[in-house]
Length: 265
Ligand SMILES: O=C(O)CCC(=O)C(=O)O
Image (cartoon, rainbow, N blue to C red; front, side):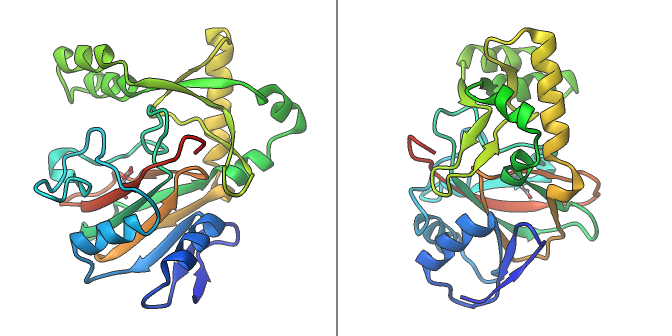
């Protein structure tokens, strides 16, 4: 399979027109973010590509195409669905998706890029003292955190916030989490869902999280994708974070399919 690197550290464009699924999966694990130009991909094809990587999920909260296409989520800026804060997908789940395949259907004339960060490279660059500190620590990830932010900035009413808190969609993950397929340790906290480090005093937990979140997203660990309509990006959620730049006017419409993680993912 022919590939072209997107940055020296991570990310690759797949140049071969019909990549073999096993080779594609191996390339995803190695490069963490893959770009495919797929202008003619149908929702069926999108789901089939997801299934070639693993079992595909119905997303916890994004709307979807429905009627047999429930696993194709729709992120439409006209409905306010622009994921503009750094995150790894659905980390409030005990077994978050291992990967996501997102395709651009409508893009604004300019802007709406997606940024990615390599969380394994970011872990590697931590000091030995910080690595020792993080060893064995777990952090809470809570869907209610994003509901609270939405409420705070006027996007939802108090009832929606109360529902999200009552739903108790939260779990704990290792802060420094070992990738089950590469064995690399990755920083696994994000500002969208991570609330605090378990067992650590609030001020210390806030300080450490702030440091880690700033560290992961330093320029040297990032790739910025300028979308063309028809681009399909596949990312490994166990080794990356991402966010959309909400700097655009006009419509931005994406279809996405996520692949379920296994217990150890
Ligand atoms: O719209 C994008 O570029 C990325 C969407 C996103 O953040 C997600 O699917 O989790």
